[in-house]
Image (cartoon, rainbow, N blue to C red; front, side, top):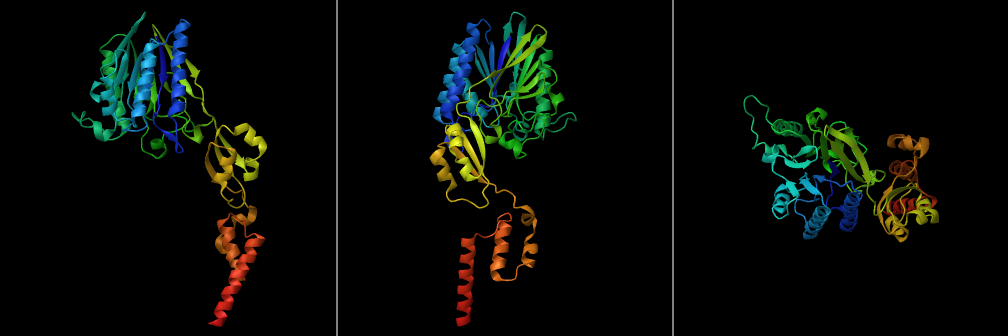
Length: 393
């Protein structure tokens, strides 16, 4: 059996204020086309798994529902089964309601009480049981699994996922055949550079130990936005689009998983197109605006990090004149050397005049860079005016 593992579509998300719907439609269209191509080559995809965060919001727009319906319909018409679970960005209730409107061959799994009951798909080697685990918020699902017989109350996601996987293993023990688990969480062993979701970076989710996922032949995870191999049989596919500049060098795609009669046989990465590249340009503002840089990156999403000693006038306006898709600008001045490492009190000790005291303050707030000659002249004029005004009082 051949399974395509994808996740974290985040339909409806914006990128620094710009909509991503068209770009996502292009990428998911390419994914659907790849499924058709594999079928034409005689190596069809039997099941497409979407491991949570289908939408970016619990209240998706009408256009987001339309895109989801079009993609699911396209995959179904390409001859593959589709199994979708909900993530922390989804409303399980709304996504679950959508399930009632879909045709046979498309399963949307959002009910925590159904975790131990799989969707079963058979091939020439027998059945494969797909256990869908929707995103589990401990405070919400605790009502379904209250502590009993000395069991620990479910207070963390690690505990909740452990209980959910116990239900999966119980379901596996009651059925012959191979098995796949689908979940949305932060697993131990994830590379922290692969593109962590916002809630993970902010400490909103705790880590699920890797041994919690023991049992199934393959575990398809969502929530991490970069491709990640936690173990041979536990993987993240990541998001189909780059949703932050921190992900700009990470590949976009999906895992093509093959199960044989004995279980996991192989896992292959399928690349997906990147509609608009992301690039970070670092240097002085003039260097970033150079003809060479503009020729190479005018059509890219740009994060400009300019290193001029002082803030420049209207940097975003100037950048967007050359880079229409400049999304971010940051001022990170180069170090000012030994003088920049002095404390404010150190600078004040050597200041004698009021002009020198103002310059000490400017050096302190400007990473060691003092007043320009024009600024110094202006400071002198202001202080002289103040002295003359005080003399007249």
